[in-house]
Length: 353
Ligand SMILES: [Zn+2]
Ligand SMILES: [Zn+2]
Ligand SMILES: [Zn+2]
Ligand SMILES: [Zn+2]
Image 1 (cartoon, rainbow, N blue to C red):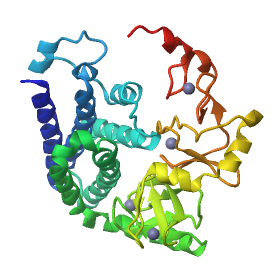
Image 2 (cartoon, protein in one colour; image 1 turned 60 degrees about the horizontal axis):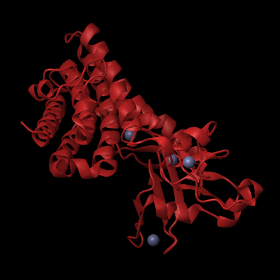
Image 3 (cartoon, rainbow, N blue to C red; image 1 turned 180 degrees about the horizontal axis):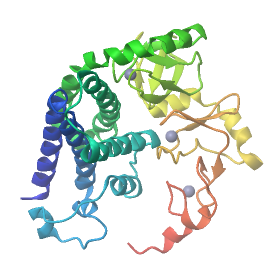
Image 4 (tube, rainbow, N blue to C red; image 1 turned 90 degrees about the horizontal axis):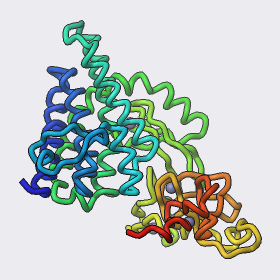
């Protein structure tokens, strides 16, 4: 078995676990929860595997290629995988993605240790709703990773990935009770001037948005509990309002123009304000974001606010990398030596690889 075959195997396993998990929701919630977590974890491992097989092997062990190909090794935990995705691939999980996947893992542990399949119908229904809420939000976030950020790696499996999406949507009816329960909160939000949109995860018209333009905010869905960063702007082409969720990719419904994070950064940015914000009048490029690893994606708006077009986050202030001079949303102490996430700093000059 070569490496491509190993990747193929791992992805097929991930898809298999997720499919079974969705099928099991009704008959065996416990197996659904366990299988779902395994599927999520396998996808994160597959992404590491696509980079290099040693990344999947737990750091406590020596990596041995033949043992790996036999499947005879202990593999990284979810948290180790998340750290490696960020440090090695520079394609980390956002804080909310990581938290969601950790919640899925905690839920799995609880199920393994404490759950009894027997119990009344009402209890079963509540358990099912709870599981589905978590699976819908976790899948929504994983799906974005698999189709956008890591789309090139998982391109061969896009059909299977959309079939998981369809299957999970088939369970939407089980969220009816959660929707009923959320109705008063939705009505109240509307009364205070919020805008209600269709939630991209559970598809109920329940996602609460602030009535705010050109500045990021957080959405909440009281049905499935999905929370995302969002931003609204007017299309520069036709003035139709465009809503961005989670990242800076969107298409205008009025003129079909597609906008990428780099375009959004340019639209939000006011070069004059940016130069003014740069201390000592130095020339400054758009900033780098440590949250999403975006290169030159932090715009400075006319009002002097800093907004990342990669992850739709606002920052109070930016610091300059003492080595390359780029502005950055992270802590830049010692950056002369260590660099920022887009330069290696002075120590990089002496590295001999
Ligand atoms: Zn929702
Ligand atoms: Zn337009
Ligand atoms: Zn960002
Ligand atoms: Zn730098």
